[in-house]
Image (cartoon, rainbow, N blue to C red; front, side):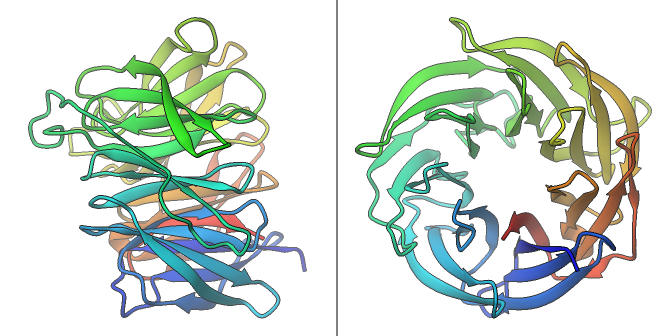
Length: 346
């Protein structure tokens, strides 16, 4: 049986198994819960180490923490390695450098970007740098202060892009891998009030896709040149006739670079786009997410499956992706409390 493994994070309390390990059957598209671990409050985002044996979770609370774990895949066991202060409130995202030696994280309420070394045993070392953002945006309810929401590494580089929902800016940082220090290389303004949240990179072409939570849109940028990010296009993520409240959450590009997927909370859908030769987007379909509040999803390697974490309906939903790139529900939802992140590991 060909299988891979998934990890899920959730908004469960520390008394519950907020992080779970799942076995995923690559032929049948079925999920089987294998184990879980408690002791971390609101384990909202996970980053897998390149070694496939360790991962880091954010504990998204006031005075938050970063927590390192070890995965024993043969025995299907999870064990905590250590934890460090996130140096701020509500750490919302963490990224492990491709070398496996550094973890970069952002505090949504703390307004800062932090760097920690990762040691040989998988533990998180003491902080080596912290950069605090300044500013606000026009949406007084959501943009009263800086709210860095994610940090993503530009593939094959030591550049990291931080989307700040509160200031409508994308910060480009260069990491000095010798000492764990950040240098600001570029600050890219986005549409006022858009609220940039997450990013996805094209696997073969110099394009990055910025999901904007507050405007429910995707902005396309070409990478390179003096401006680093050059605006190409903006595409809406909800139907024109939709009049309800919506916040978009996650974006991903298929491994063959042909399709882009983005999730809508409110419309509760996955928006599907074809990626054209020039990197721009052509809308294809809206597909129901199979539940409420699709906060996160992942594309399983191989290109045939998409797994959605529907936070508000306490469910994971598996979708089969056809040749047209359009996903369809493959089975009944799998119950698990308030899932907010799903990652492939091992």
